[in-house]
Amino acid sequence: MEFTLIVAFALFGTAIGSFLNVCIDRLPVGKSLLYPPSHCDTCQHRLSPKDLIPVFSYLWLRRRCRYCQAPIPWRPFWVEVGSGCLFAFIYWHYGLSVEFAVTAFYGSLFLVLGVIDLEHQLILNKIVYPAIVVALIIDVFSPPPGIFDFSLSWPWLGIVNGVIGGAIGFAFLFIPALIYRQGMGWGDVKMAGLIGLVTGSRLVLVALLMAVILGGLVGVTLLLLKIKKRKEVIPFGPFLSLATIATLLWGSDILNWYLGLFQF
Ligand SMILES: [Zn+2]
Image 1 (cartoon, rainbow, N blue to C red):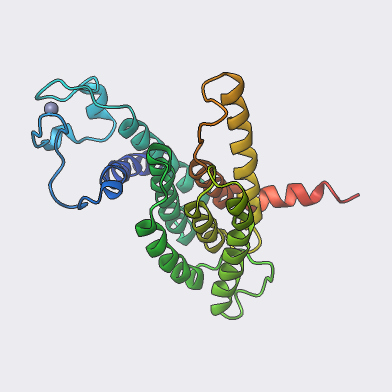
Image 2: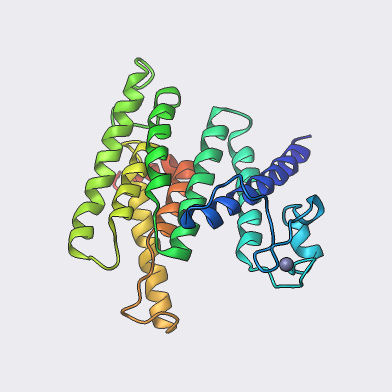
């Protein structure tokens, strides 16, 4: 039964992933999410339901348009697979609970933010600003872990913990963004503020430090392998996204492990 449910949530996740692909394709270029319906970008042929089965249509059609044979890029496929794995894993981790819903929502949000930044070097205000409002509302009903652990006694303290986290996140990237202009933009700073609202004041630095370490490791590797040149910009948003999702799943474990290193 449990296994069946995990598979069901994986399939549900791939369907969500196919909507996230629409967001990733259309939001950066200012197109509507609802209209026009899905179509091939090359021949404009409208896609039928059998062309839109997540993951399977790609494999079945060998990543080509059924109508004009134009190749379809890999990204939509990986977003669907990634989203399917994420949903299955979040369900396995949290069961059917408020945490599941909250983490699945934030996972989808940060997947979209991260992939758009990867493709366009852009963190969109029109995603970040509404997400800040939604995160504040979620903070009331599902308080993030705070420095002060009294969130349950008074629901609004969830917001206080979130806002303190947001302020810490914003401040943490504010100075680097002032100094290191090309690598980090205001989009990253605002996204760090959002991450603080999402992860709460207790875990925001876990997320941001993990992003810095991940970004540093990948950056150095790309330079050493000569895939990227020194002057080329490596967007930071994908690392912020990955680290935030990891923190939502394991943040407290990571923090406790880290603090345990200093206990004798
Ligand atoms: Zn086509």
